[in-house]
Length: 226
Ligand SMILES: Nc1ncnc2c1ncn2[C@@H]1O[C@H](COP(=O)(O)OP(=O)(O)O)[C@@H](O)[C@H]1O
Ligand SMILES: [Mg+2]
Image (cartoon, rainbow, N blue to C red; front, top):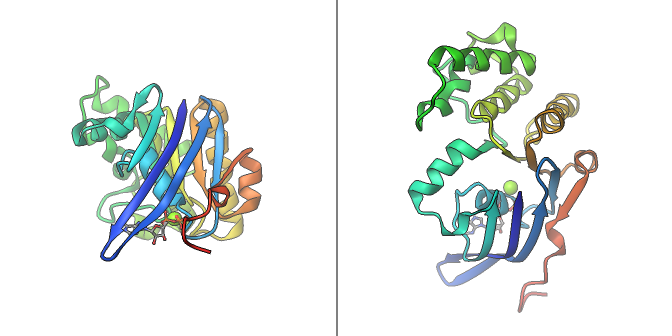
């Protein structure tokens, strides 16, 4: 499902070029889960942003479901993000003025969908039941705990029935037990719905549970840096 070959990402800053990804190779089979680990600053978020068509790579090929996202125009990238991917950020990025149910429906506002609005609302409510929030549909994010906010973000990432879920430290802002429950949920969804899951985490216990581990600290050393 995901095949990354010789991926390089440089950032040009005044005075120097920072080589963040220096020839990354990564494969994730359809329906499998992989944890991306590595120290802070090793390029985990950068890699996830490339996979999410949010950041064009400097070079290399990045294939997801047969499409080479490295060649996408901005419009193609937007369609791909909306229809193929669910993205979960470390900070959930919920819209504070909308209810929990409305937040889950936001990705449905873009793109053309054959499903009726009623059907989508039903599915949104069903997803929120699945993540244990059926009693919070009409609440605003400000009235939720951290774990509930993150579970709302998981439901939002699923509303478009993506084939791939990308999660950037989804448990990073949560306490241990709440984080474990969000991780349980992601792994359950991956197993039951056959979605391909890539989770960035610095939590080694979570990485082990996910199964496949991709360690960015194994990249070749920076040239000229000791
Ligand atoms: N837009 C940018 N411009 C310049 N440097 C960046 C930019 N984004 C990230 N970096 C640098 O790239 C490195 C990797 O960042 P990141 O992918 O966020 O790491 P991680 O998520 O593993 O902590 C860091 O050194 C960071 O400062
Ligand atoms: Mg990061």
